[in-house]
Length: 137
Image (cartoon, rainbow, N blue to C red; front, side):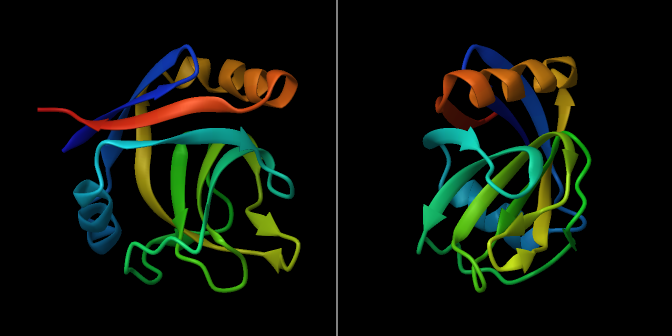
């Protein structure tokens, strides 16, 4: 299953990483469509994030990394920091005020990558942007 992600004025297509993060993908698929706000990350470099507080998908760590490439979207299931989705648009080392974190790489942007930097600049300089994750048929 692929997803359409509308973030600010940009549209991206993303592949769900079923082979390497099946539990995260299955749990996220159940909450689609997913609406939220995308804001600039505080400690992770060129990345935006969706803070989820105490929200739980009911998954642990799988296919986790601290160094996602631009367009490698991570789900952090919580623990040392709040639950979140990390949306890297450039050089990123996933972290919180507690230090380096690792999140589940469960989505990869496959179309629209050329707009990741522009989205990052928009979030950085103009603030929170609406984001919607939609399942494609």
